[in-house]
Image 1 (cartoon, helix red, strand yellow):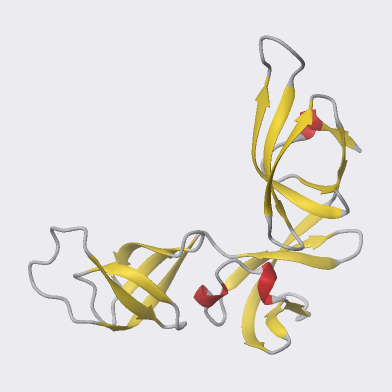
Image 2: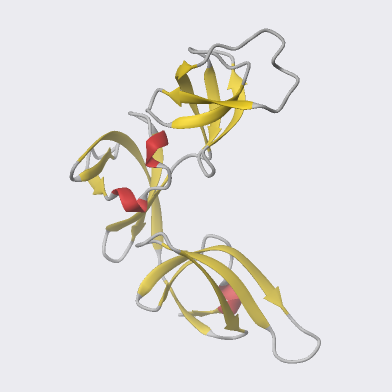
Length: 188
C-alpha cells in the first residue's frame, strides 16, 4: 500500500477494479485549500486514458509489475504471438493491448509488462522509434525538398504513413511508434 507521495511516471496501481499506469502527474499545492495530485493514467487492461485527481495523502494499492523483452513472431485470429528469447516461452496478446500493431515487424524486440502476482501479460510496449522500408509510394521529383508537403507511403508491415515528397520506394524511414508519424530518412 502506498500514498500519493509515491506517484511518479510509470507507476502501476489498482484503481476501480483495474490496473492503471501513470503517464503524467502534477503535484499541486494551491494557496487556499489542501494539496492534491493531478494524474493522467492509462488502463493496462483496456488501454483507456483517464484524468484523475487524488487528494494529498490518499492511499493507493501499488501493483508490482515486471518488464520483459520478447520477440514478435506472428499474428493470427488468436492474437499476436511473442517469444522470450531466453526461455523460449510464448505469449499470446490481444490486439487491443497493443498501440499501433500495424507497425510491428516480424522479429522485432518489444517490452511486455507482466503483473508479477498473477504472471499475466498486461500490455505490450514497442520501442519509441522503428525503422521500416517503404514498399510503395509515388515517385519523388528532384527539387521537392523545400516544402512541408507530404504524400502517402506504404511500409513493409502494410501500414500507411505520410512522408515528405523526396522519399522513394526502397528508402528506409524512421517512424515514431507513439504517433505513427515519419521522423527521418535512414541511410543504410
